[in-house]
Every structure is written in C-alpha cells, then in structure tokens.
Length: 525
Image (cartoon, rainbow, N blue to C red; front, side, top):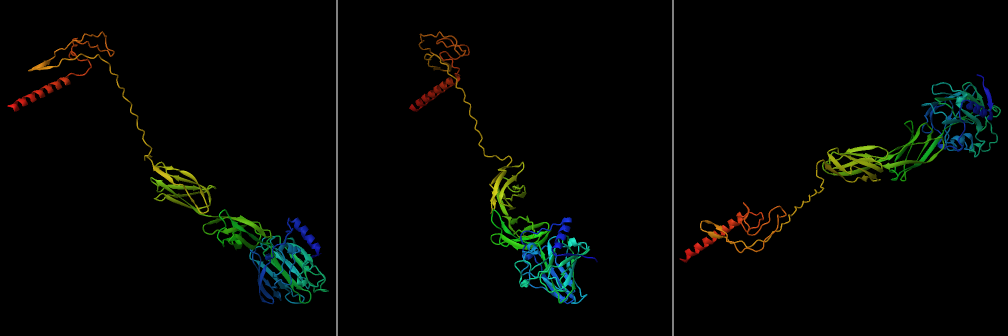
C-alpha cells in the first residue's frame, strides 16, 4: 500500500483542510475540560494474550480490548501526563493523576508486530471522545477503525488532529525532566489507516514525548493499533479521554428545598449518565458525564413533592448555577352544610387549567390532594335539586395546604326563611250621623187589661219645623204630625230603628212588676 508521509505540523494543516471539506468542526473550547473525562482501565492476561477494559465517562460505551503485546500495564499518571496547555489538554483537561496504558510489540524483533483491538459495546457518539498515543520512537504504529456498520473508516473519519510532543509544554511532567530533544512523529496517510513513526530512529530511538492525537468524526465500533518493532525494548502510551462535564446547581422553590437526599439524575434518551443527591440547602453536584443528544436533568421527586426537569447542554465544560424548581404537593379541604350535602361533585381548577374532581362525603366534607401551592377555583355542583351558596370561589393554597369557605346547600322548595309580608287592613269608612230635631217628650204607655197600651199625648210644643226634605232623601219629622203608613209611632224620630224591641222590653217590665206585687200580697196574709 502506498503511503504519503506528512511531517509535524504539516499533518495538522492537512487534516484541518480535509475536515473542513467534510464539514467537520475542529475548534476546541477556550477553557480546559475536566480531568474526570479520562478513562480508567482493567488489565489481565499473559504476554501475547492480553485483555482488559476501557471505561470512559458516563454516556459513552465501555470498550473491551484484546492484545498480542508482550507487555501491558496501567501507570497512575503521577509522573507522566499531558499538560493542560496543549491542544489535547485544552480539550480534555490535564491527565495528571489519570491512568493510561503501556503496550509494545509482540516480540522485540523484525516481524514481531502486536495487534491491539478495542471493541466498543455500542458505536461511540461522534466527536465526544479522543485518544492520544505517546512516546512513539522505537516502534511504528498504524491506526485504523471501523464504523457503526463495520465499514473501514477513512483517514479523515479517524480524525487525526495533530502530531506533537507533550514535553514541549508547561508545566512539564517529571518524565520530561532534562529532555532537550523534542521529536515529533511523522503521520503517513493510507487508504483506510494512518501510520505514525519517528524519522530519527533507528539512529536515535530513545526519546520522550513524541505523540499524535485523534478525535473520530463519526461513530466508531472498533479501533485497532498495530505496533511494529524498530529498535531496543519499545513501549508506547495510550490515553483515552471524553468530553465530560460536571453539573452543579440547586433545587429550590417558593416553599424551600425538598428533603435532603433527593436524587438528581443526568440522563439522555432514557439512560442515566450520572447521578447525585441534594444536601440540606438543596444543592447538588454530579458527573462527569459526556455530552449526548437530549441530555436532561431528571430529578427523582420524593413523596409529596413535585420537582421539574431541565434540559442541559454539555460541551465538555463544567456547568454550574443550574436551578430546578420544587414544590410540595398539598391538600385542599372544605365543607358543604345544609340540605343533601353528600355526593355533591367538587371541581378544583388550577392556574394552568388542570382540573381535579372529587365528591363530598355524607357529612359534606371533601378533600383534594396533590395540589401545588397557588390560587385555585373551587366549584361545587348540585344540579337543579340543590341551590349552593357560594357555588364557586377562589382559594389561595399555601405551602401547607388550603381551606375553602363553607358552602351552604338548600334543597329546591325549602323555605329560605324570608319573612312573609303582612297585608295592611283597609279602614272602613265611618258614616257621618245625620242630625235630627230633638223630639218632645213621648207619653208614657199605660198598660190596659187584655188590651194594647195607648199613649196619652203630653204638651204639644209650639215650635214647628219648616224644613223641607232631609238631605238623605227622607222627609223631616214634624212633631204632632200623624206618622206615615207603616212608619214609627207618633212622637218617635224617624231614625230607621225597629220599635219591636222596646215594646217587648216594656211588656216584660210590666209583667215582672205585676208578679212582684202578687207575691207581696200573698206573703202579707
């Protein structure tokens, strides 16, 4: 296979141009990412049959690897590390105190190539992770990969960023102490791979810090590194890192924070990337987690609370000052009094239009649970058979709940207690008495035996009346004149009163007197 050698910074320019043609953004964030984005490893096996795992930040698939390398170790990163001032460190953070792998050829002779293959449990998200190969001098490396469908990746898709030397930076790791030569490997681009080698070897093969770093631009399923012996007892270094972020903030609301220990998850597409819990003030911190589409902070609300979720964009930098809203879920109580108070429908409408319904108990009480604090509208429905007052009211539900005003129910047809108006009696008009002339003394009737009484006229007055007809249409009475036929006896005024009653009374008095006289005579004998 024919290869084209590219030296030092020239390869970086070539990759940038090629990536630009493909629409791939290569700009790194201005600030260094968190060091927590570096992978951790497990290793096992024997020379020529090595195995292990690579675990990147949450959100990225785990990789298992197999290797025919004669050597395998995982140093702590205490003495050899990638400074934050380099391009790799600016994107992924310093690797100080973070582990890496040491690998080498299968044999230390010509033809003793080793093959190390990293197989991810799922295709890796594009642009979210990187790998740096360091101390490339007494061996030559060839890097290749396959995509999500198992297809070979092109050199542009492998995403070579640049070749560089990690001792050419400040601060230096202790591994770079006394180093004056700063060799940079040459990258040679093939059809579906990139070869890395230091041109000074085999003349000078024992150097420090010669490196090359990659950020694949498409999803990767496998990554393969072939190591060929060139001189001495070579080993090369491998760092994996991801664009991981830490997220911190507080959970609060109008009624204060939720209970201590509320779980806050960082999730994407339903998968949990990281998790943390709140303290007494509602503060939380979680991560690291790698950027992924649809990343969201998703609290696990404790009983009796509602806590809102919040989308969060991760780009490899830490995110702070996030605020999640939490409110307690409280109860609204109320009572209906009066007639037919049981089984009435009660509707509670919240400010966002959510409607909760319940019915009154036999004693008229009701409770609506699970409400957030705020103003609600309470409506009691009675139908045509019941009148309710008030049928609707607004209630302010507080942090500990709310109580609605008492509602009075009145069954249809029941008197309401309003007093009945008493009709005013219409007065009867009193007739005005018509004045009459005073009559002369009437003769005293004298009883006659077995005969009706006769009148003895008394003195006749000398005055006469010259009045004409009375004002009521009757004739005026003239004393001494004979009464009209059917009229009253002579000497009585024509008042319209009957004469029967006075005559009967007179007769009774006479009979009583006669009886008394007879009784006296009988006793005197």
